Image (cartoon, rainbow, N blue to C red; front, top):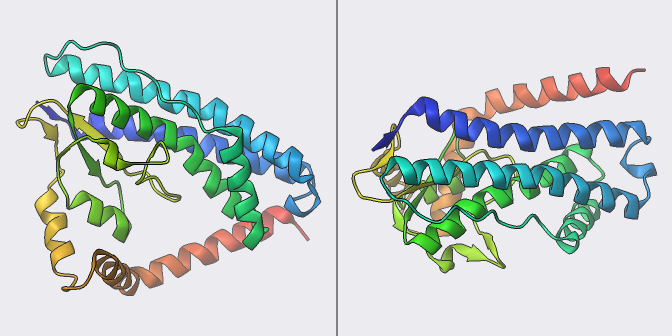
Amino acid sequence: MQISTKDWSRFTDRLSKMSSRAADDLRVWVNKNGGLAGIDRQALIDYVYALATKYGEGSAAWAASWYDAVAEAAGRFLPAAEVASTVSYAEAAKTVNGVLKTSTNEESLTSALERLVKMPGVDTTLNNAIRDGAEVAWIPRGDACAFCVALASRGWQRASARMLREGHAEHVHAHCDCTYAVRFDESSGVRGYDPSAYLDVYEAAGDGSPTDKINAIRREQYARDKDRINEQKRAAYAARKEAEGP
């Protein structure tokens, strides 16, 4: 069974929209309250936690529904997928405090919130795959970063607890719509995902450590895309200044 490009996009699009909506809600609330600099830290943590919980529950529920659908299509009738927990209050507080140590940029915080929303969905897929002895693969979406290219090059692997760090899938990071796919037999997969192509990129990045290789891929990507990236940054800055007004 091959998951079509259309169906995979439907799955990832919905996950992405949940993260984006949480970020939009945070932007509106921050602007309504005069910006990050003027908001009480405790109130900010409370609101980030509320958003991470609300949208994280949706992320986990959608991933569980998708997992069940893939299992059924593969002829595997398993117990219903269990939804992963949303992030704890302590994790939300750690995220907010960590961002504010180095930045009062609203976008830094919204990016961190998007990660908190994404985590329960990714955790749901991985936790159930571990439970059921299924395989997973990290599937890039769009212009994947060097880290995700390296992960994608690993191909399909038996899900295991070593893929978890402090109870969460270790691969979740900001500015990323890549996620795990699950399969229940070696003939299944996601149409268009070719781990060998990512492996070629990874192996061509030199003979150093995994970190060295990822950094080499990152440098190559930046050299290729720097003009487009800088233009996007300029456009985002101009839009933000226009929204702020004179």
